[in-house]
Amino acid sequence: MNEHNPITVRIDEMVQVWKKNVLPRHSLIRWMLKPEDHRMYEGFCRLEASPHGKLDNLFVFFYTPFSNAKTYSHALLQNWLNEYDDPRQRKLLTSAGIKSEWDVQAFRKAVEENNYAACDQLLPAMILSYKKFIGQQQAAFVFSVLPKEMSSPQQFQQWLHQWMEQPKEPGIQLLVFDHVEGNFWGTVFEYYTDYTVTLKHDLRMQDAIRQIATAGAATDPYAFFRKCMFEMGEAANKKNKPLLSEWGEKAIESGKKTGDKSLLATAYITYAGMLFNFKDHELINQLLDTGIRLCNQEIANGNEAIKPMLLQYYTYKGADLQIQKERKEALQWFMKAGDEAVAFGFTTQAISAYYKAWIFADYKNWNEEKLQACQQALQLTGKLTDEEIQASEYPFMAYDYVQQKQHDEKNSLIKEVTDKMVSAYGINWQKDVEELKQNYTKKKIREANAGEVAV
Image (tube, rainbow, N blue to C red; front, side, top):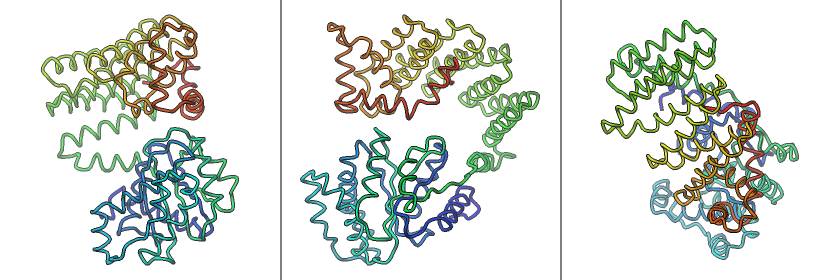
């Protein structure tokens, strides 16, 4: 690894924070970082779980999806057994000099019988068994997770409580990721304060990304374009409009020189977006309209890749009109983004656009428009997978619609939506959505209350 690479430098810093703060008595550890820094948490765990790790601890790392507290230990054991059964994993163990078989009979039996209570108790035992299997009984063991799906933060917190209550030998540690703003697992960490530790560090990821993105900017037109993007951001943060305009024009020129129309469209929309703080509506409108014409020309010429950009332009148009208090016209642009996304076959983007219209109409008490946005979104129910439902704003509209229309027995959409939500979240889906609203949408609710819709 290149020791001067900005990402390597930051992972090294994380290693130092760990060495300084983590003690053998800590059986639960969390990295508390910005939500967007989850990739660095992932990188840290993956590095430490590899032969190149810099800590003395023995790490394993799983992305096992979390659905509820009752079944998660079972899912982790199953995931681990699947890893062990993988021929590629066996080959790696053999090349590391581990020729013996791991006795996993008890763990396999509990998993096959879906004995969830036994799986909770067996997780620490499986860790001890693994340490013995690879001949590392004395090594401190870190079981690190980053669930690729998280259906219920409250349920996960309950599972963390269960983990803390399980009898464990010293040197067995669980590592999780938490958000600085969310503090989702705070209750557990405060309750078991003597046996938990929270690790925090400012990773300065914007600086790292800038260093990587602008390397070679003097000779590479694409690198120079990225430099323009960063400089525009700096100027906007400093509220320096002349400097923003200077770099905005350079970005447009750079985009034209490359001949890359997607890059040019990015220049127009980024420049326009950064002008929102200055409320230069005339220039914003000019940039957005130019970008929309460019996108439409490209789509007509067969450039499918620029379609998502056009949808973003529509949302920006709506947001700019909203700031100017042209509210009905703003709503039309949000709906247009949704309708066009449907036409393009971009179902999840359509849901997101209709959600913007829905939450805006809700704030303005425009009940007819709110219902229209909601129904347009819910008409897409059959085109969404359970995973797409869980990752989108669909549940909030589904919940609201079912609450309003639950007594309308002839409404076939109610049944379709309810069936889909039961499939995605289980029979108690309405309770889960109430939790989601509390945990995940605080920011969006604040925006709605302020009459804002984030672009």
